[in-house]
Length: 168
Image 1: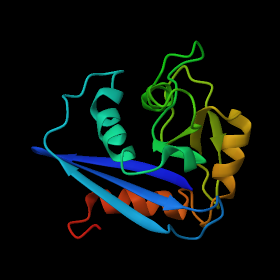
Image 2: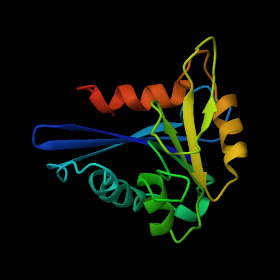
Image 3: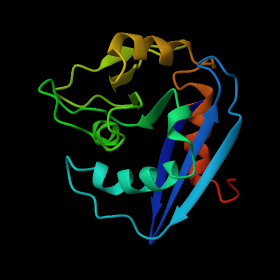
Image 4: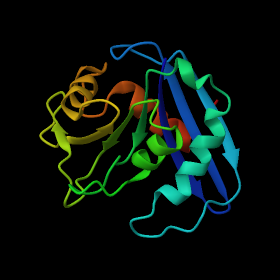
């Protein structure tokens, strides 16, 4: 099983959505999972992980982590070439480096050596970073995910579900 997480923050509330899917080329998730919570930690530049990591760790308690092939997050695994950890890196460490974590970001974070991935006819790449799996391999996996657009279908669906009032 592969999991893809994304979160949404609104006044006084958070919503975390995860898609579980069996393979990298799956056209849709097996299931969407939802967790709602109270206010997130305040945003601090360079410390985004403090907002989202507790949500993901709480959600992972609902899964058998030993059966997870990889986790995708919306963001960066590391923030610079020296290895400063982003959300994905902190998640990888919290999981005792047992589950590969792949970060898929929509915008470039200066100073990273993220792998740009062009999908569909888009001229604007996604930026992939990873730990626990070689970054070139992780970029290839994101490249081959189902969907004709820049954002793989499953990741787009997770993003949309974080904002939907009727999300699962």
